Amino acid sequence: MPLFNSQDILVVGAGVLGLCTAAELARRGHAVTVVDPGGLNASGVAAGMIAPAMEAAIDDLSPDHAALLRRARDAWAEFAATTGVRLDRDPAEWRGGDVEALAERLAVLGFTHEYDRDAGRLTTHEDWKVEPGQALTALGRGVRLIEGRATGLTREGARWRVETTAGPVEADQVVLATGAAEAMAGLPEDLVRLLGLITPIRGQIGLVSERLVDHVVRGPGAYVAPMGQGCVIGATMEAGERSLTPDPERCAQMLAAAWAVLGRTPRPLQIEWRAGVRGATPDGLPMAGAVGQGLHLALGPRRNGWLLGPLVAGVVADEVEGRSSKEPTLAPRRFT
Image 1: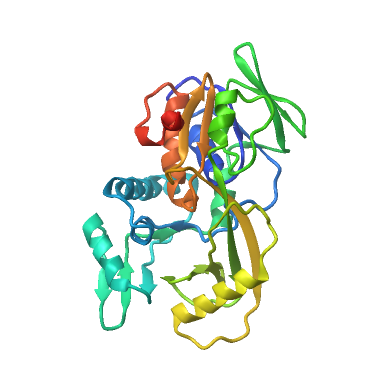
Image 2: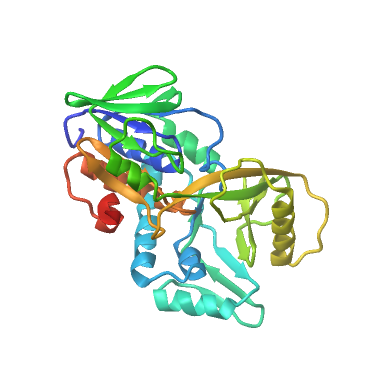
């Protein structure tokens, strides 16, 4: 039985935040439509990391921020089971650089880990991952998908009308999960200002046909993670960049760093390099929740879109249903 009376909800954007939100709303009994131009998006150009421990240690996050990332990770257990997303709980490892400092940060933040001082390795079972391709497919089941680009939005009576390249779509409520895209026509001025705070960040990764690792291995300048029958090498963080064309020089640097992390002699590999553009807010946390009557945001997770997906989805779904947010620090209006 649905928790509330079903209503028409349109989600604009089929990245991880958009599809997680759509899947959560559908699970609660709502009629959900997703509009997206299709093709490979930033969520597909990713390793699928659900890594609160390593992310908190690498970025030296505050205890509150780290605790939020842990809650986001914990939300994946039930969410994955109900949506059919396969969850990988193999350990994650860090090699090289100032390992001792990372171990100290994990200890302060309360993340369990094992630190081998002699080997210079740090391992944690607190970080998980998903396969982005499998996860996006699973999340898209049960929702209506319209392939098109949203170009404008207007309020007509009690409903929203979204213009798309596939034709107009009307809905009681709209969720904007448009990543780092520029504001579409017709948005309220205060919302346009909010969206203007989101910085595009390009990430480049390489899909390797050979399986170099059986669990996530991170280190200075690169990580290597299992992906399908092979693995993925990543990832850059290039603020302000929007180009989807991989940069050969940056990719070569990342590959060299990956070999150094693995402690292996470089050799030829078959690699498909990709680039995707993510969005980041000024405080590094996403904007999740209501911004007007029947209008909601699910944007700006920086590089933690996969980690934060179910948590953001729960926040947005609660507010769609008239409940207060369980994560007020994510409220978009915090920047106003």
